[in-house]
Length: 597
Image (tube, rainbow, N blue to C red; front, top):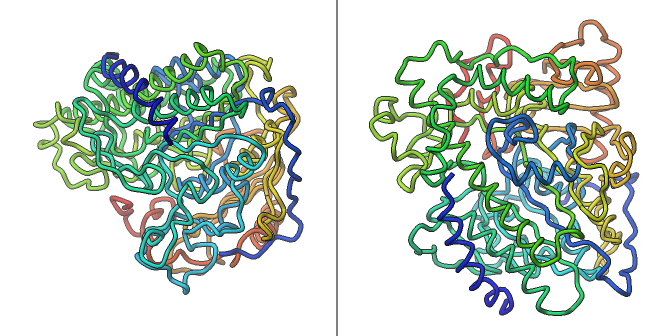
C-alpha cells in the first residue's frame, strides 16, 4: 500500500482539484459446464495488456451518448468510437447478482448470489443455497486468476458482494476484496453510499469519511485508479495491471456538482415521453438498434408526462437534469484516467471494458425520492421549495420511475424486471493495440458470465479447476474475444434468468419471459414469447401464435435452471420479498407498491 499512498498524494493534488474545477452455497455443481485451463504466464509479461473494467451502476441502455443519449459522455463515447459497442449484452438485472457473475464467470445462482448480498447480522442456514447472499470460497474470481498469472490487481469503488455478517466476531472478512484476489481495495462495501459523505474502506479496514472541502467520491475513486497505474509503473516489476473501477454512478443517491446539473438547463422540460422518442430516433441513426425496431407503449403504471401538473413538470425535470449531470461528471473522471494512461504511454495496450450492472432504476415510484432515495412521501410542493438543494449534500434523491423507462429505450420496464429493460445494458470494449474495428456495433448475444473468461483469455490466463487443493465450481461463461475481429463469432446461444420469482430464457432467436405473483403457484405464471431476431425491443408477444415453441422454451428454462441453481426455483427468501413490486405487469393484481426498498 505504500506505493498507492505515495502515488495518491500527487493524484489527489491534481485530480481532485481539477475535478472540482470542471464546470460543465454452495450451489450444486453443474456437471457439464466447462472450465478454462489456466495458461502459463508469459516470461515477458509486458506484452500482455493492462485491463480496466469500469462498471457503472443503474445506468440504462440509452443513458450514454454512444447509445443514443442526449446526456454528454464524450470520454466514454471516445472509447466506443475507438472500439466496439455491443447491443445484446445482458446483465442479471440487479447489482450484486451481476457483479457476482462478472467476477466469477458463473451464474449468480450457482454462487449463492441470486439476489443481493446478505444484509443479515448472522448467516441463516435455512436460506436455500442460491439465495444466501455470500460468494462460496470455491468460486475463483478473475482477480484471483489474474494475480496468479502475474497481474497486479486493484479494486476501486463499489463491492456489494460481502454479507453484513462477514466482519462480525467469528468471521474472517472472507468475502471482502482482499480475500477474493485483489491486492488493494479502496471503496465502499454496500450497495450505495453518499457521494459527499461516503462510508469508505481501504484494504481490510474502515476509514474516516473524507472531510476535504468540495469532496466528491467519483474523483477520489479515479485518483486511486490513476495511482494504481502509477504505483505499478514505478515498481519496475513488469507486471501488467488490472483495475476494477466500480463507480457509484448512477445509483441513488443522484448527486453532482451544481454546475453539472445547471449545464442541462431546461433539457428535460419536454418530459420523459419526448426524451424517450428522441433517443429512439437517435439510436436508429447511430445504428445501435435495428432500423425496424418498434418502440413499445408506455409501461403500465407509469404516468404520461402530459398528465403532470406544471409544478410536477418543473420539479421532475430537475431530477433528470441531476441524473444527467451525475453521469457527465463521472464521464469526466473516466476521461482523466484515459488521459493519464495516454500521457504515461500505457493507453495503447490497455483493454477497457465499460458496462452497467443493470437497467435504469425504478424504485422511487412515480413521485421520486427527494431527501431519501427510496422514500416517495415528500410532497411535490416541498420539493419545489427546496429544488436548488437537489443533487447537493443535503439530499439523497432518486428520480421518478418513468425516467427509468426513458433510460432503457427502446425496451420495456427497467431494473429488476426480466424484460430487456432490466437486463440489457451498454457494453463497450476498447483496446487500441488489439481491436481494429473502430466504432463498430456488435450484435452477438453476450452475458455477464462471459466477461471474466474474456478478460482472462486476453490476459493469457484462465480459471483454475482446482485452487489451493479445492475443486472449483465449473464456469458457465465463455470468451467472446473472437467478436473483437468478427461481427458474427463469439455469440452466446442459451442463457437463463431468474430474479424474485420472475424468469426468462434466451435461445438463439427466441426469448420467453414468465412473470410471477408472489404467493401463487409457479404453474400459474404468465409467459410471453418474443422473436428477438425480428423484434429487438420485445414489443410483440407471440406466445399464442407459437405455443409449441413456448413449451420448448419453458422446458429449456427448467433444464438450464436445474443445471446452474439449487433449487432450480423457489420463492424469494423473506428478506428479499417485494410483495407487490411487479403487480402492474400482471393482470387483475393489487396496485403496485410505490417503492422497492
